[in-house]
Image (tube, rainbow, N blue to C red):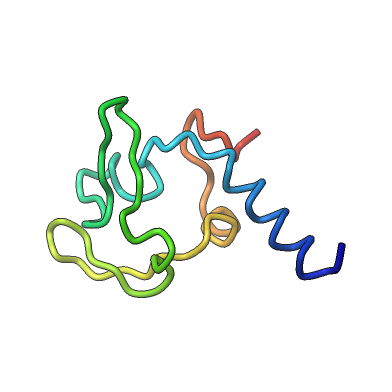
Length: 86
């Protein structure tokens, strides 16, 4: 396996830890990203996931820059019970 393939595999495995609580997408702040969708099992999913990185907007209209979870966690502590904190 080449370097880039390994990096991609590692990134997918890392993101697979997500429990889809929506916390890092604004659910706990009461102003989530407009791309966040709640399913019947109380899990959240991004309807723009493949194109999420970059400028996005919250429900109230605030602009923000969506970044990969690994980058987010470099500058912010994980939310309580976040799978990435383990």
